[in-house]
Length: 76
Figure (tube, one colour):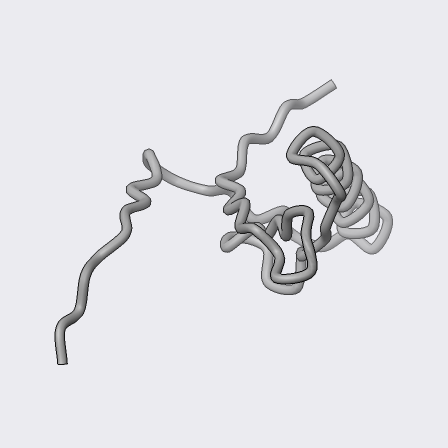
């Protein structure tokens, strides 16, 4: 079975918990009460998305290269 690797961004949610998004897969956003739950939820969301693409004969997006995620400061 093929394996796919995607960068996931975990951000604290204002109401608590975490929001998880996958930049390479537009619209793949989920959340969890804990980081572990958010991780499980986003894996499930990715899996479902890929299964749907395969079912419909569509191309699976492949993330190329290593992600470079950083926080930048902007002063006004």
